[in-house]
Image 1 (tube, rainbow, N blue to C red):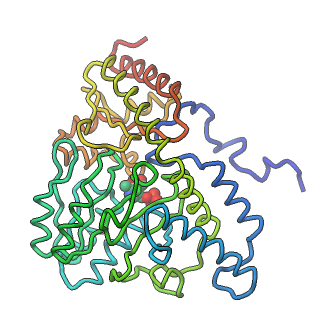
Image 2 (cartoon, rainbow, N blue to C red):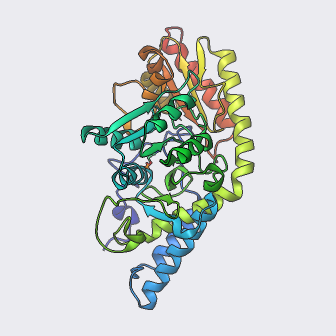
Image 3 (cartoon, rainbow, N blue to C red):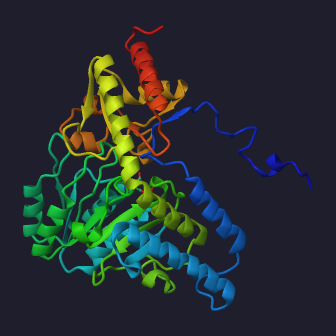
Amino acid sequence: MSDDRSALDPWSRGEGAPREVMRIYLDNNATTPLAPEVRDAMVACLDRCSVGNPSSIHSAGQEARRLVDRARAAVARCIGARPEEIIFTSGGTEADNLAVLGAAAAGARRRVAASAIEHHAVLSPCRHLADAGVEVALLPVDGEGRLDLDAAAAALDAGAAVVSVMLANNDVGTIQPVAEVAALARAAGAVVHSDAVQAAGKVPVDVGALGVDLLSISAHKISGPMGAGALYVRTGTRLTPLVFGGRQERSLRPGTENVPAIVGLGRACEIAAERLEADSVRLARLRSRFEERVLETIPGAVVNGRDAPRVATTSNVAFDGLEGELLAINLDLLGVAVSTGAACSIGDAEPSHVLIAMGRTPAQARSSVRFSLGRDTTDDDIDGAVAALRQAVAALRGGGR
Ligand code: PLP
């Protein structure tokens, strides 16, 4: 057998290997680089604990169970929950689906409500419910991307079983008034869910202070692995599972646990909690630097949602008269990774539903690009990205060299 490790590693060289041009990564809302501490924890788990099934009674199984429990406690601590209120899932999408579909199925009412700027992981289950005859209210936002609380109150008064409002939006970063919605929901007897996938690790997330019944997080948005997430389920909340099988995760998400990924999620939560304050202060400064320079030096640039409270990582900018997707491709060629919206809608000709809900025209929405900063972003990255942006915009507007 060859001892050339690259022969075992399809990505290390040859066809299909990702190009090595990426120098500046500003697409952290799509996914974050795996933190070295998370990788170490996952590798240690794979090395030491590769045989035990957490449901087995022997010691290998019990070691796996111990790791899952430790991760559960870390996730719970990070969001102010109790460990038994954490249900591990395959990620944010599954957590959102379980919340919306599971709460709708468990309730007697045939009505659900969600903000119009939710991620597709919430909107698509809502659409599925609508196809099955459930009344779905999509709650509007203002021009800055903040939820209309009167519309939320009206939908709850009308008797919604569940209301879903994200804590921070993935496209523009606006923070939503989730605690206010939860207070309204409580008074109206509705279950309240919040997708905190883009908020965790960026702003404090405390399920008690928010007053939510259900809350989703995803590991790969907080420097953890892809394919792991969790749904917080407040004790006493009625939820119908989406899959059926064994007794894992209190039968709400049966199936043998993905132990290394769960360990990665737990470790990512520990690190996010430790670094939350320092990271958010530093990133807020970097984001301001980025936006000031862009607005000063690029004519026709407008920051979407600039006047609303936003997570420090996200800057969504419209470039008058340009195609955002073309600009993103040109930036990629210059070594800067950005996105025009949700990663799962790449190649999708539709403009961002978030920007449309904020009242932008389809052309304005299509001219927008999302820059999302992360723990590894530096001052040099910001300066390099602005320089590349100026070059790309000038080229696309016909003035470039
Ligand atoms: N919710 C929001 C707000 C997101 O940004 C994403 C991913 O982009 C998801 C849910 C889906 O999470 P996952 O990729 O873990 O399925």
